[in-house]
Length: 209
Image (cartoon, rainbow, N blue to C red; front, side, top):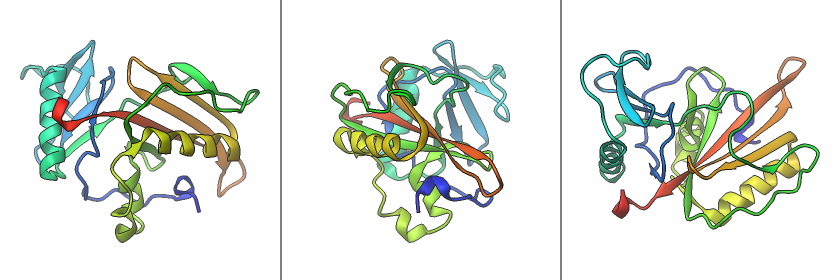
């Protein structure tokens, strides 16, 4: 059964560190410290401290992309499960260049991609979460078998399968944000459909973060 068809129970404490340091950031991204409740939201290229996911500056200072990258890199290397990176969730039309769409379902070629971390939309309201965390809520042992990042070739294979097998699949590539997006519809438990969203966040090598 596809992970996208799982209905996640209420979220519990994170069991994994951030999967990778993003190659690029985008406005709307969030950086969360679960042990303190601190949240920074990227707004106009600056990471603004906020309270309870409120993107307004709370007056305690801002962070730069470099500072967030360095902090995330330390969290990844030290397996710090208290630090969370939450990609911005697109609303409406997916951003970037179209790779596939319902009338033209064949996946167009991607430029060379090194590695990417896969995030999926949690329909229980947690937003975009790493794939292995969603799996861990149902089967913790299986989650440890899911790689934090996958190669560009593996990502293309996953995208190709999604586009070929799912209804009304659409995929785009936003080079500036370093993201590949794909959404599609699947049957719901009740009559109707559910929109599924996967975001592949291109990963920066830790040595360069």
